[in-house]
Length: 480
Ligand SMILES: Cc1cc2nc3c(=O)[nH]c(=O)nc-3n(C[C@H](O)[C@H](O)[C@H](O)COP(=O)(O)OP(=O)(O)OC[C@H]3O[C@@H](n4cnc5c(N)ncnc54)[C@H](O)[C@@H]3O)c2cc1C
Image (spheres, rainbow, N blue to C red):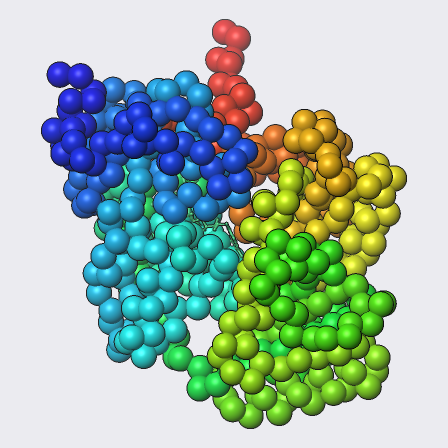
């Protein structure tokens, strides 16, 4: 029997896609890479995932797990060799259990993030992971990238929201680690190895996630500011005044919102008559008690008196809140529809953000005249999307030629400031060289050993995160 016929016998022919039916799974969201695959497999149960991994392990077929394919580093795309099997988790989309008394929800990996939020809300609870791609990304992808999003400031990233996992190992065994426990010190924490592994260690098939009380009230404000240091000062004041009630503090540069206005003219800024010296905007959200509104207003009034906030609009309805967030969440799409972009997803100690941006902006003006900086991000988390669009009319090839020098400059500055070259999007295929350059060599060595232990045949998403050539050389036998 051929590999294909065994796969079809296992999953049914409707769930083994080839040729035209497989095409939409073979290009990543940013169109960085189009690969080829033996087929796209769509298992419907954990047992089917385990059986197909065993089949691949026996035949030496590489596996590329795929969720909603919204990742930004081409981690869910196969290479061009047509030797790998893409495994889409999209059919595994059941909510298995909501334990309201334990504040947990157990879902299959293919559940769309927005569906998990909805299921929690129907049970009177909040699942706080929230990001622009939530209508199409899947929980399995969110955990495998340790996704961040807009509410990390209060609730943490995907790792901090996860209590348990069910995983099919690279050898096809099923690890049932779905316990909804907040305390469990029985040895090494395997859960945290699979979270953020970008599909290179095994396939996550289900997860038990933390739920929170639904906030009694939410308040959202949109601010116009002159400088990023002003935004940092307002963030510090808001944290001091609001504590845990402050759930989001996002910043957007003027050019980022100008791009949204140009691409999506139906979207309106909530402020009119914006002063010429306004160069930044911020989106601030609280979630908690009704009184938070007064504390937020007092913080904003003080910031306006001090001249740090030039103007502010407070959402008066859910529709206005949604419109403010739509502006923020449209930036990524506006960039991708405008032209080729050199993207950076960096994190820094919050105390060093302002100096990093000032120095990088100055370097970039010299290095790439005419390039357009589209900066936005999660200021509260010290995470900026420092994006460089080519000059008006620049071709994809022009921008690609500048990309190595620009990335090197930005990432050198980030690392010198004690930051990370990947805050929330992962390494995947696109940032593999940067990981090799900047990661502590001992950490890189330990990562290779973990990979070799958990994926001894090297079939899980090869060529992602770790470049095979950086694997440590075997220690030679001592000379007799
Ligand atoms: C408009 C937009 C806004 C975004 N905003 C944010 C943001 O604010 N914060 C943020 O962190 N990201 C953001 N992203 C990036 C992206 O949405 C996240 O990385 C998301 O977590 C990816 O989920 P996915 O299901 O699409 O995964 P995919 O892209 O399909 O896969 C991502 C990685 O996970 C692996 N994988 C997927 N499913 C599994 C599984 N079940 N088991 C093992 N491995 C698996 C893949 O092999 C790949 O390595 C944004 C993307 C877009 C398009």
